[in-house]
Image (cartoon, rainbow, N blue to C red; front, top):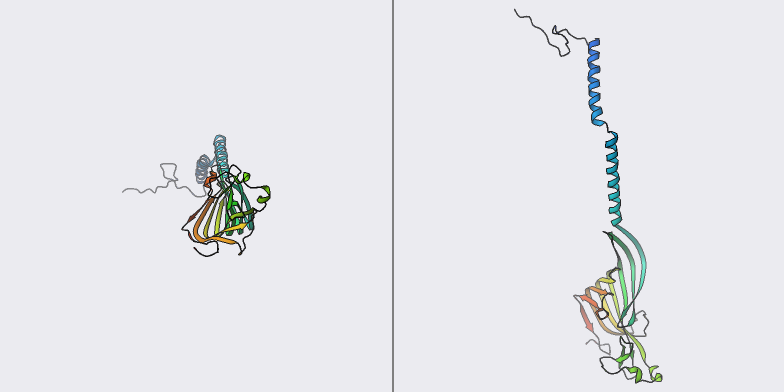
Length: 261
């Protein structure tokens, strides 16, 4: 007959003695297991001085890179109301004046890869812009200032008027200006490009007395009235290239008596 033996993992001898939970042997086994587990945890969780130094270097490099990125790429905004901007530019030697008026504006500065861009977004915009300064002579002809500083009759290739008119008669020359009046729902002024882009535009062109910019009144002589989806005007480039570019432009022209042509 075979004698059966019970087996316990806590037995230390082949005699298969049972170990009591309250015995010294059991306590020793528990202590050994705790020590072994603690060693494993210490190996996993402990960071030595070398590892800590490398981590701090990596963290510093990351923060430095982040700071450089923030310096090279950011956006700043400024809200304003009741904006008026007076801009002066030259065309064929003439100093001309443009005035922008807006109910509200947002000045936006964008920095991207060390290339700053400043754009002003305008709402409910009015723009008064001198297109040309000239003189109206007593006989009805018009004299225009040339790049050389001389006055010549419009569409004429004759000598300058300076030598053919006496100082007394010049007092009768009436200073005039061609003026564009623009109204737009929204507009953008790009400072770096000196570019104005207006959207949903109403535009009028007047002949007005004087060489100083002034508000348009209904009694002034209107030459043109129209609408455009978009209007662009750049103040940079060659002097002869100063002009307005209108997209999907529709206009009515008016004659000397104010009648539609």
